[in-house]
Image (tube, rainbow, N blue to C red; front, side, top):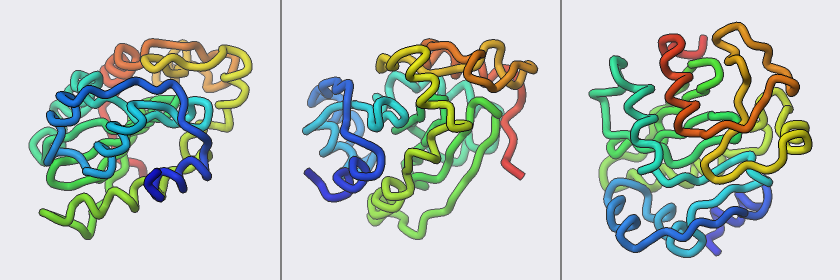
Length: 201
């Protein structure tokens, strides 16, 4: 296994919930996504790590989510973005075809962070190792609620996430008692409609 993913597994946990990726899906994202990621898809499929705290996603499943979050923002015209990963709580990791791992959105709070890669053009894929090595269990464990959510609600299916009901942005409480298992794409689109996307202070 590629050393990058071995280090990710060492930090977070073994991959689970493997979904086979067809050759046509891999071909669809050649020259759009990092080759290291496509190689991992080919060997291991789309999957979760750390019992589902972090997921490598099928970007096509999240095309509508990308549009919902980025329309009417500066990002809509900056680049062509694909969601390559997400957390159990709906943190979204975007890969830009020109800018790499340049955008992360916390859907719970409708906040974003950006970064500028030193690798551009034909060297863009070199930014992927830095992205992967930045992933940790804690950075995806919103409010240390993952283990309680897993115990109370059970493991997530590939199309599910833990979400607060009612949503925090609607005044809901961000406690484990208000978490539910929800369909990820649908809930993420709903969250995008509540309040405009803003940068973290």
